[in-house]
Image (tube, rainbow, N blue to C red):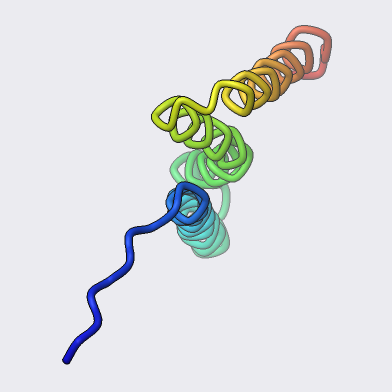
Length: 108
């Protein structure tokens, strides 16, 4: 006899979704950075390599933001309003800090 799989709890579904997002973000970032680095080393100063390196860094930096968005979606789907509200506040703070960094850093 085979045991029937148990339904996943809400926290298990959230952990699985967050894990997928984090793995995908880190994998995509790693691929972009590795290909960009090899291309830059092989071709010297290359515009394509620079773009890949920048994409890799942006993907790596936005991966935690994607994690927060996935968490909000999961909490809302479960009608867990306190956690949805707190996680939305975290997202707003993350976005506000990114905007502030872009606006107030004159070197960019």
